[in-house]
Length: 247
Ligand code: HPA
Image 1: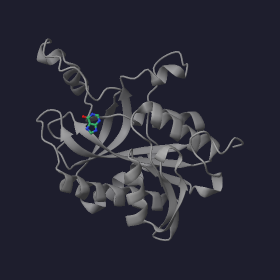
Image 2: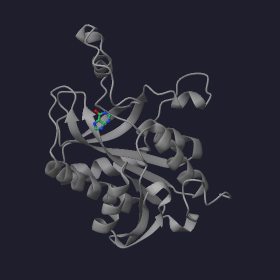
Image 3: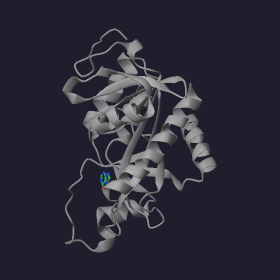
Image 4: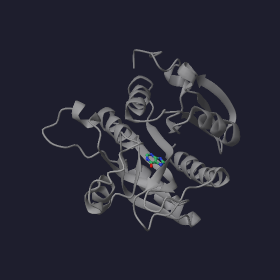
């Protein structure tokens, strides 16, 4: 825990609560602190990556942005776990559905994260790693979701390096990458969870990703700004109630 501040986080370990919520967007980080925390104090702003600590239902909790994509999530999650002693990270983000039963506005609890990224290749094992969420976090979150009657799907997501992929219309439909991942039961696509789960594994910490489905890659349906905000609020309170149960 020696080397802090790090190049990306200008804080001390004691500035962070044991559990950190991580949205991708720094403005979302500020909004979570302002709307859901009591007594929020800003603890990081390097590169505009805003981090705050405050209390929720009387317990300390932090929020800090991850940025977009696995290299960015990889940096922040590793630094939080390794240099700042953070015990739990709960990513809160959005995803695109790849299954007909996963509708926009639904929630996805990412049990595991398949990936098309080379990120896992940097941690040499003689095989393929399975980036996996922490079971206690999954169970806690799933129980709370069920009690609230939320529409939550629990399964594998795809952490992709590519947001603007090729349309692949030169391939038969069944051979396009979306269809091939879909055939393996992948619920939806996002861009960060595999790096988060691998860093939790490397450092002996715990991680969970909770997502709202913002669009469907199958139908093209997408949430408008107001609907995005409403689903976002449902997800944040579920993530914060999960954090509350952990500490
Ligand atoms: N791809 C990657 N990340 C996303 C998407 C998507 O289609 N939708 C929301 N986050």
